[in-house]
Amino acid sequence: MIIIVFLSVPVGVSLGPSQLGFNDASNVDLNFDVNFGDGFNSFDPLLDSGNINVDFNVDLGGMKYNKSPLTFISRYLQQHLASTAASICLQHGMLIGNRIWSWYSAAIDTDVASTRLKLASTLYCMGDLQMAADVLEDVERRYDNSVQAICGCGGLDLFNTKPLKLFTELLNEGDIDVALANRIAYCVRFLRQEAFCAPPIMYYEMVRAVGDDIQHRRPHERVWMNWAVVDALPFLHYLQYLTFRGLGRRHRQLQAGQSLKDNYVEGIRQDKLFHPETAANLLAHCFEMEGRIDDALNVYLMSQAGKPRNNAANWHIRRLTSAQR
Image 1 (cartoon, rainbow, N blue to C red):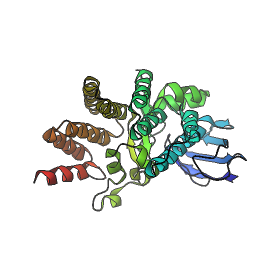
Image 2 (image 1 turned 90 degrees about the horizontal axis):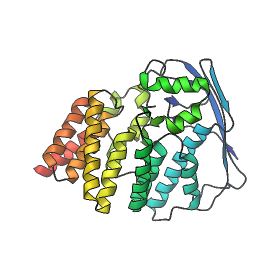
Image 3 (image 1 turned 120 degrees about the vertical axis):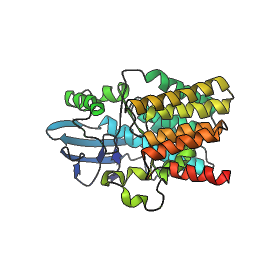
């Protein structure tokens, strides 16, 4: 069975039928088919065991990259398939089957962090805290100073923005698979269909609009702002905070909270965060869990000041101020 898949690719490409815009920097011709093997007769995350292959060709303004299957698109697709199927299972109280775990495994080297963090988030949501902690430790070990964070939410100039320079250079040199697995960290995205694999605070990010906020979204924001999207490093520390809190490892919990705070402050000072408002919201929620409501409210207000519209902080401010009345 052949199906055409439309999704947002992590380097800023919104997939359409054939011709796509790359942030107005270049025209991109990008086509691919997804072939589910004969063993894949229906979408049943517990029973099916067919193979997925992706045939893909991309022309980035003269830079051609062809691979069948194209590894990073195949991994990215399986990351979302795994998380969506796991979310369905958790929503309905079902066990997550081996096929879903195999999708996570196949997608694990999408980049340094994003699939691993979504795997850890799924483990946290299903209550396997020690396994989640182990995955998070692995991410922290891999995320060294050589890793470059990049974002594909459309607000960047692909060829002139420093965080994407490494990606485009390696793409042109043909080292894309090595770069993705060892040198690049995408922001972490949860589609609404993946909500049950995300910490509850992320639900607010999926419905961030208040009033007429939706009318004030720029064209490249109209898709991803319906998702929960966060930089990998702050999400790592937030998940560590939640996980060590659940395990009763107070010292590690406080370490994670401090690391999240340090990462946010440094990211703001050096303009290194692509979603600073979301990082601020996660930090504020940690203050909430510590019972420091005034500090939490102040951080939510900082988040709101930086991005007044389409910011989940607006919901959190209303929630906290209502509770204080």
